[in-house]
Length: 221
Image (tube, rainbow, N blue to C red; front, side):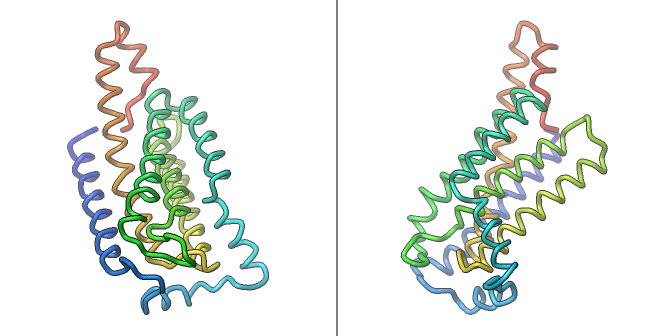
């Protein structure tokens, strides 16, 4: 990855860490929404009728079974379209983000909702990390035009936004839970892509058939 790309990743990591850190300090050990969370949640009520039904469907995308299915589908698509690097990124980045959220940050921060640890949102982390990895792979796909790559990336971002809004609108999470999850994803996916890229470059360089290895493991650029 070019130096400019590495600097961009570093800035995103700093931004993600700052977002998670600031919000964690504000909500640590709490069990009720603060004024800011309540004000934001009031903007997206989804309590009745069609909005509630749509919100339930979107929010459920972060449940374990849909996430496992999306991860499997993403792994197959990544291997088919981007080779070993794509597969590695799918298998490394989303699980890392989910483990960091559920097994590290949630117990440390101790913010609860309905008696369960809620910060950051595990549902949002799962969906957003999968979408972010898909965006990285799509944006580096040579078979797509620039307009197609950007259009798909924007659609993935809007999908993540819809899931986050649904989690808030259906009273599953507070806005700060969702925003913190996005911070986790921003801080994890970029470095994961760099690590995968570095190991794949090393493997390709040491391969007895360097050209074939390079074709099978196209760079995430």
